[in-house]
Image (tube, helix red, strand yellow):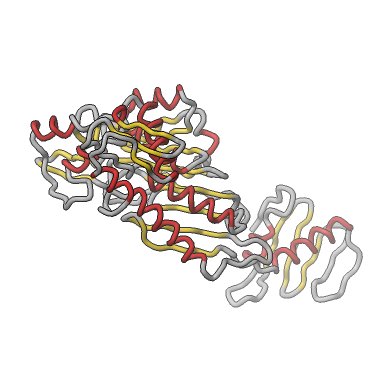
Length: 403
C-alpha cells in the first residue's frame, strides 16, 4: 500500500492507524513516503535513505531530516488525542429547549450553580416577553387599555424597539403587532384548532394590526399604543434575545469559547473543544426529515433560520404555516422554504430571518441585498426541488461542498 506524502505531518495519524493490527500489533506493511520509505517488519522500522534505524534499539546512521521525521511520526502518532473538554448544559424554556456547550480554558471549571444561573436568567426573560404566560410583563401590557405611556422594564423596551426597527425595515412584512392574526389562525397561546378562519374574522383581526400604532420611549423606558386592543407578539424575536443574554452570562463567567442556543437560534463564541471554528448545519426544509442542506462555519456570530416546514396544519390539501403575512392576514404562501440569516446578535438574526421569509423571494432578497445582510434563501422550484440563493455577505461562511 502506498500513501503519498504531501509535506508536513498531516498524514501521521493515518500512518499509525494503517500499520496497527487488529490486536494492537505491528503488521508487515510498506509505505512509500517521499522522500523516505518505511518498511515495517514486526517491531523494526527501516528508513531507506542513507541508512536505517531500528525501533527495537539497534541503530546506525540516518540522515538528520529522516530521524526528525520518524521521531515526529512516532511521538505524534502514539499520543492519544486530548479529551474534549466541552461541558454541556441543557433544559427546557420558552416552549422549546436550550443548549449550552461551554469549553473551559486551562485551569477553568464550570461553576456548580451555573445551570441555576442559566435557568434563572431564562425564567426572567420568559416572564418579561411571553404571551403564553398571562402574568408576564408583556401580557399585562397587552391587556392594559390605557392610551398613555406605560412604564416597562429596560429589557422589554429594548426588544420592542428592535422589533419595531425590523418591522419598519421590512415595510410591514414583519410586524410585532401581528398577534391577533397569529391567535386567530391557531398558532398562539390558545388551544390549536387547525381551521381556516372566515374572511370576516380575518378582516376584523387585521384592523388590530399595525406596528405604527405602537410607540417607545427610552428614558424612562415606556410603551404607548394608539389602540387599546393593540396586541404585541415577540415570539419571532424573544428567543434570539434570550440567546444574547446567555452569551453575556457565559462571557461574564469567563467562557470565551461556547455555543449557545434556544430552539433554532444559535450564537457562537470562539472555538469548539477541538480548537476549531463552530460548524453549524443549515437544515434542508423538508417536513418530517432531518437532512443537511449546507454547513456553515459561524465564527463569533449568530445564526437563525425561519421556515414554514415545522409548524403548520393542512386542510383540503392546502398547507397553512405559522408565518402570517400581516398585510393579507393569511399564512405566507410562496416559494420560499426557509431563510437563514447570520448576524452579530441573535435577536437581530432571529427577527430578520422571519422578516425576509415573510417578505417573499423577490422583495425579501432585495431587502437583504440593499441592507448588506448575510442571508441564505432555500427556494422551491417548479419541479419541487430545492434551490439555493444567497447574498455575497453569506458566502464566506459556507463550507465548500465536496465535489
